[in-house]
Image (cartoon, rainbow, N blue to C red; front, top):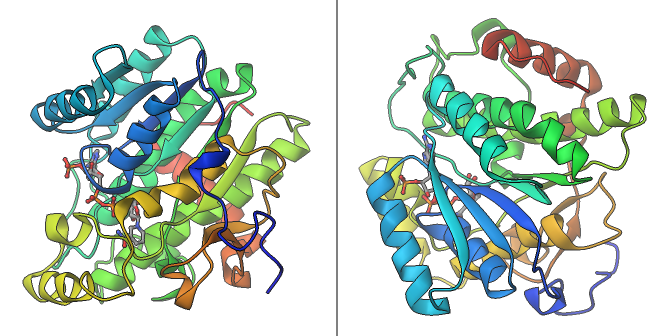
Length: 316
Ligand SMILES: NC(=O)c1ccc[n+]([C@@H]2O[C@H](COP(=O)([O-])OP(=O)(O)OC[C@H]3O[C@@H](n4cnc5c(N)ncnc54)[C@H](OP(=O)(O)O)[C@@H]3O)[C@@H](O)[C@H]2O)c1
């Protein structure tokens, strides 16, 4: 393992300077790592555009943030349900109307471990539809402004990329056969990560190297993830784990995405997250990524499939 370039404690938000005049767009901020990342960005003076599916929860989030940081914070919510392509496209159009720059788009929202196979309104398996296709469309639509801003796209993946099939099930993307909650979640997170490395290649080929794309993950963090979408058994298991030292705070889980959104001179080829036990916890930095996440033939095909089913061609 390489030495952590940020020292023994790894990357921490103490490295963030004044973010006044900078705009960050982030998905899924009503709880967990997304909420913590938003709070830290706002505390450093950034403008934050939150994209959430539940307006009531978003309003509550804004009130909580104002209580913590004062009324002067520059935050707004735009309604977006990643499970509906029309909602994603509408929200992206609204972002483009309302902001002048995007320093980073942080794709954080997700559902996980959905116990039985469900389809979104667009007929995508729910985890692939929300986690991957939803964010793929959002990224494609916001790309022109991110490019103009010389900004970044940050994907919050998961160590789950290294579980399940470890490749993309092209002949059965919707899991008509052999659905498993963890296999389908793992595939959705693998798809998200693969598209980041594929995006880097496409940007490089087009000479658009001022836009950066990063993949990271929060390790094992104390959030609502399993409580929102997991089975009863998974909830019991994860809630037991939460009291063990193998689960860190949601705040620490936010550090990798903040690092990828802000830190200069990061190697895009790396995968970022906690570097301690099993990458669940520990100092934040770059760590090993298994080669299947960069399988070029699979990534190219996945990109084409994703453009096909979302009906969105990236303007790279
Ligand atoms: N926690 C972990 O140990 C862990 C491990 C590996 C990876 N991750 C990744 O970390 C990221 C953050 O998750 P978290 O752990 O902080 O979970 P969380 O507390 O459940 O937060 C997830 C956020 O995503 C939002 N969301 C879910 N479905 C959505 C949809 N259809 N449209 C828009 N927003 C939606 C949720 O909104 P609602 O409030 O409306 O539900 C919530 O704001 C995810 O990408 C997850 O895969 C987490």
